[in-house]
Length: 402
Image (spheres, rainbow, N blue to C red):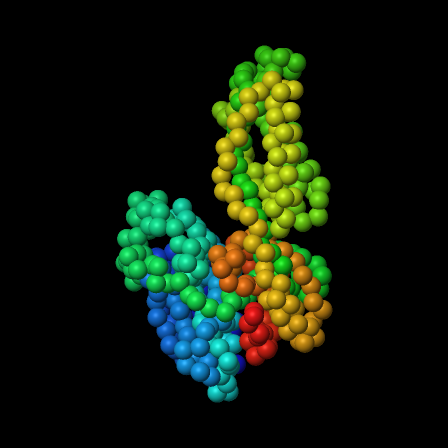
């Protein structure tokens, strides 16, 4: 096999920033990365094209030409100042696995299609998962009108990239299943001392914005008992969010941003705005937690005499992995001599787009410290090679759902 880690290093050079990895959707670095990916796919024995949604597609035929395909994929766009492995590992590991089959002249009972999606991160445009949603037949045409911060329309950027906004429906893949290899982006596997894990579900997520309005006043002249301090109230609410997140296994709740107004050292805060992000693989648990957090915030507001406004934002149900695919991934992990370990994904992935459309599953690879979306993102060559071996084993033993 070729050096997967060397390819990942080389791939990271396709960036808008010198000395940092930034590869936004449909940008020139994204196009350059797509071109290099197509070269590697062709060298691995695949027929290659760019689909109308901007996804790089490499097809390795099965023993019978035109046979249904098993989809392998992930994304090749990044956040700003990203790590090398988020998304990229899954695509290049799939290319590596196909290259090994091609080297051995091995054809499977089905075709393999490797998909390099271009819009998983949602950094440039106010949409996400457009490539995988198109492949799943779930593309929302409204996404075409989204604009980046420079006013460029998604549809225009896609066309300039080489896609075709008028033909996105043709990107839908009729396939056997979808598999994605991905770094964990969390610390669980490292804590367990395990290189690989089998994903059970991608957590559902609810986000909302809370505004607390009290009364600004002079920090030296307003007695404590007469204050309506928006920040003090918000502090209680933030602790209530944390407490609820810690109240049940598999539930997490985070306040990721907090802004204080007017923000002067000698002024009692009159308004505070903060965000809440609640996630769980159990939708009922997540919804119950969201309701409890809202009730706790309302109780604090009532007791402290401040106004409360809650604005809903993103809301997505959990995406359970297919039991049959989970079992096959787990069996391959066991055959590799690794203790099987199941875990949910707290982050969203392209695999979500296929829930309810195709059987889908994910194989997680340990990452150092659980760090991701950061240049410090790190995996070992040994873990990456093991992931490719397990992926090959899955392919060779894959049994489509009846």
